[in-house]
Image (cartoon, rainbow, N blue to C red):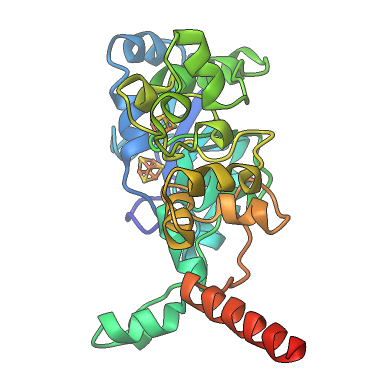
Length: 301
Ligand code: SF4
Ligand code: SF4
C-alpha cells in the first residue's frame, strides 16, 4: 500500500485488452506540479490517451491496471524510508522509469534540508517529533534506483514531457537538448540581461528547457531547470559578485529550485544534487574564513 492509499504495482484492475503500452504516474515528496503539467496538455492529452493505457495515475483516475507498466513517470524526491522502499517497488514494476522535475532529478527545494540538521528542525516544529519519519536528506530518484531518463524543470516543460513520453513509447531516444539557457536566449534573440543590465543570472549554468523565459522578460534566470551538462558554477560566481551579490546572496541564489544540485557540482559531485554531505552554512564558512585569516595574521606577526 502506498502513502496515498492506493496499490503501487497494480494488484487490482483489469488487464489491458488492446495491446497498448501502459503508463504509470507516481508521486513521492513533491507539490504535484509536474503531474499537473501532464494533465494540462489538454489537446495533446487526448491524442496521448489514444496511444496508451493509463495503468496507475491517482491524480487522474482511480482505476488501476495490473503491472508491470511499460513506462513510469516519477515525480518527487525521496525524503522518508517509506519513499525509498516505494521507489524500489516502482522500479520493479516498470520497464522504463523516467524521473520528472527538479524534485525527482535533484532533490528539489526540499533538499535545503541537506544543509541543515533535520532533527533540530523536527524538534522545533513538531510537538511529538519522534512520530515524524524523515530522512536527513532529500535525494533524487537516481540515488536509489536505475533511472532511464531525467527530465528537468520545476515544473517540467509540457512540450518536453510529451516528447519524452512519445519517445519512450516509440522506442527511441528523447530529443531533449542539454545545453544552457544562454543558448535559448541567443536562439530567441533575447539581449543578455547580465551583459546589458548587470542583472545576476544563472542562465550560463542552467539546463535549457524553458525557452529562456525569465530573461525574455528582463529577469535573471534562477536555475529552476538545474545545472546544464557542462555547468561550472564556480566560474560564474565572480560575475555574480561583480553584479552586487555577496557570499550569502550567491549561496541563496544557487540553492533554490534544485537546492543541492549546484552545491553538489561545486563539491565535485554530480549535477543531480544527490550529495548528502552536510556542508557548512554561509555563517559557518564565514567564521572558518575569519579564523584562517586570523591565523595567517598571527603567523605573519
Ligand atoms: S519539480 Fe517543482 S513543480 Fe515539480 S513536483 Fe517538484 S516542486 Fe512541484
Ligand atoms: S528560472 Fe531559468 S530555467 Fe527557470 S523558467 Fe526562468 S529562465 Fe527558465
